[in-house]
Image (cartoon, rainbow, N blue to C red):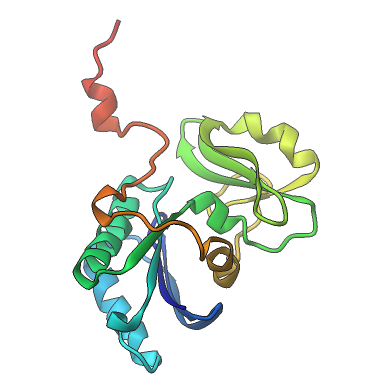
Length: 204
């Protein structure tokens, strides 16, 4: 199976091309501004490092959140467009599970993305990437009980966190047989309302 992985859910853009479980080419770089204009040229660039074209892939794996509202939307939109145009399968991945592929010494992976004002998007996974606590929007302090048998993993400056080193092949292997979605029904998973949506809700 040949596949393309896309993650733009944070300030780090990660792209990878895989074949039969092996990463053939990849790109990972901090992009703080204008990710939307850079993603397509970068995809084209990494395909120059493999012997086949994007038309020859079988499946697209896209990280659909939680994370940056704008970043998630960029990755999902590009993945949907490619899947629709080329009639390819598409599978969504959790950004928290993606970071949980980081190798650590402790049993559990406590993953967090800073959501500001003392809140995070958090999830807890075991060494086989099975969820111990499902992804959710919660106070950062609520993760404390899970840290007794776990290690905090985050790209953000959270107390005690280690920086992730994702294992792209591992998460693709786990989800390679997931049921493909209709591109038109593939949407971001923000876990909370956007600020604009929150402002539209009438106050009691």
